[in-house]
Image (cartoon, rainbow, N blue to C red; front, top):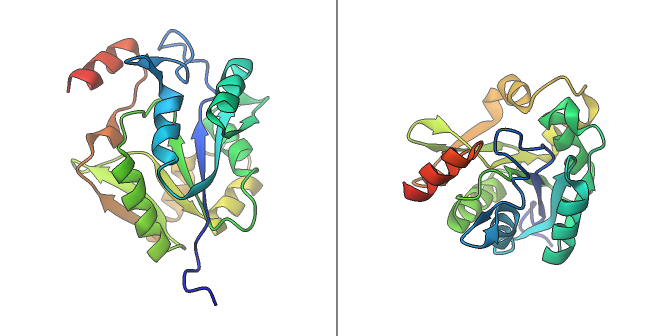
Length: 200
């Protein structure tokens, strides 16, 4: 008899954008010789997340090759130019029904600690019908964890909605995970952002 109703959690890494402001593909950008994607995957492999899926679009050949090297799954979003929500749907569509939730992170958040992922997952396992959102310095960040019911809703709605809209419409389900990890707020949009994040 199962004592834990939520023993399978998937992970989706959104990496479909072209990184125009950054000046190139963020997934393969490096910190001390290690790509953003490899850093994030390394952390996620130290959790119980399975499968780990990266969503690619603009640089699909490059990122899918990196995914194969790292031993993770990938989803290609042919409509990546429609925006991040369409990529989220592409990734979540590969999460099977036996997975009770999905951790969703962005490839431009490589500074999140392994401990943060694990603590958030522990919190979700205790409340598998809630949305887990990290909060640092009174600000919400990434990754987030979505329960199965929300995943189903996301897969049914139009691409012109945002994840922020979904969460706002289900605010009563949100659990704020307060953490000491500034990495949840370090969104790397430009090369300058990267230098600031490395030096802070």
